[in-house]
Image 1 (tube, rainbow, N blue to C red):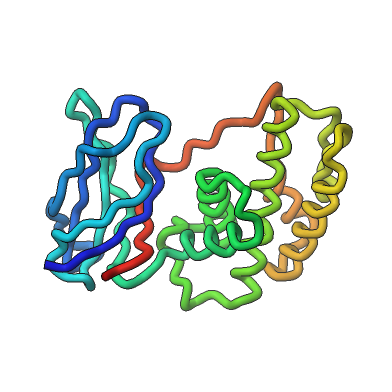
Image 2: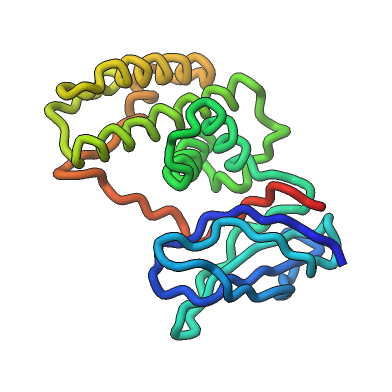
Length: 228
């Protein structure tokens, strides 16, 4: 048997009882359950990584799904091959290297959004080897800016004195220095991604209406980060 370490984003459900790990020799093949995990923490702090020693091969493809207390299971996540890391995971890691005080789940959501918007397809199907360093850093800067905007709105109680989209600016409070950094990050993201100012502003807009709009990104996305 082989060992594999999975890092994933748990769904925002309060009645989960089980994490199910699946394996297949091919990404589009038939997946079989290799392990069911019942020690998964408690809502809202479900586990977000797990090491399994039940893999048949470290080079196979792995996915997860969750089960609630009624026996209902989520959809299976996008599969990730052993020994690789998803492009989403790579952008998340780059972003957190720049600001490790950001909320990881927010960063994952914003990475999914930015990659899907930029490439126009499921972010978990983007092959990192087809991207260049400018694009990766540009996406990381965009994700950092969007995650900072989320954090700033949360700290201000979900409301702001003003909200405009020149490049996107927040008025009022003691967050002007952060906004200067956000604007710089957006400008740098524009350069790295080769986008117009208008499109960067559109991508960076966070809707505020008495609080941040909710983000619902899939049900159970798995990111493989390490194989032993």
